[in-house]
Image (cartoon, rainbow, N blue to C red; front, top):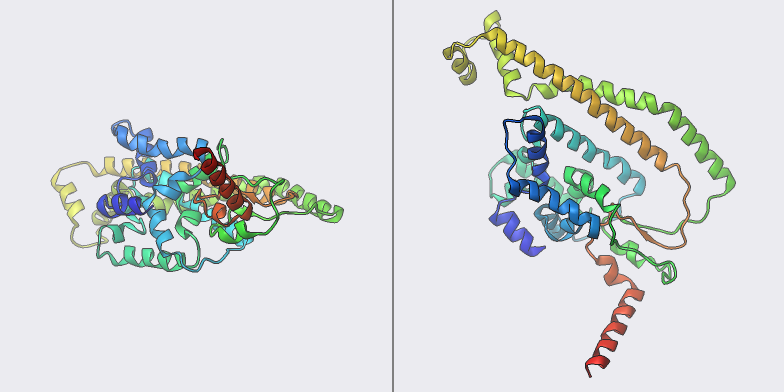
Length: 353
């Protein structure tokens, strides 16, 4: 982790990384004129492939964004699970916004607003330093707030890690329910044992599930409407849309003077009508795509709420493979694991002797 922080963080200045590579992949997927370098594609795919076998080892051992947050984690406090689940929605929104802007040619928002690049590059960008400083101050008490609640690549790693072949597991036969593993995990990845719910609670949860199923189309439609409504604001981040608006205002005499972009446009003798047509097409694309992504996020929210109405029981502590950062802290605190390691060392010593 220290090596990653020095090399990939301060020496490589946080670029290029799998987090930002999401945008490169989406850009080339929608724009045939852009080429995707093999190195960028490998950086994007390799952590996902490894997550299928070993979980989120990229987060624990390679990512400089996670390393700088781990470096300031001094007094970790647990975030209530009911609060943590809705906070993760921010990551889905950020991912959707990054995909929409990159695919539509409006820019790379992840790279533009990376919270820690200003520290890696020793930049004087006040806005970036403020955002990164707020997250680092929060990171003193909350384990990796950016990774858990905002990182768009973390959304992908979370889903791939759920399919991991080798994941952190707590054997019910050996668990003594001491709770040390849960207390040692600063990321809230350890779930405590749950007794079987009584009949009254099960009936209540089933009613909530039924209501959510009935409301699912409404939730999806609401998400689509919000996505389509917000697409107008997002489309204005596209250079051609902004230029079209400026040219229109100058044509109507609503503004005085010209900007560098509008002056270059007038000097090129291009047809303003064609620019306005291009802008209208870009707006329509953003509206359709925003409606689709908004509906998808609405569906994810509905399914997430439905998932939490299911009554589950367990006899021991359980490590959630999606939330686990593969840092190994729980292994260090587990008394049964420490005993097993001593036994292995003892046997190894006897064999060597």
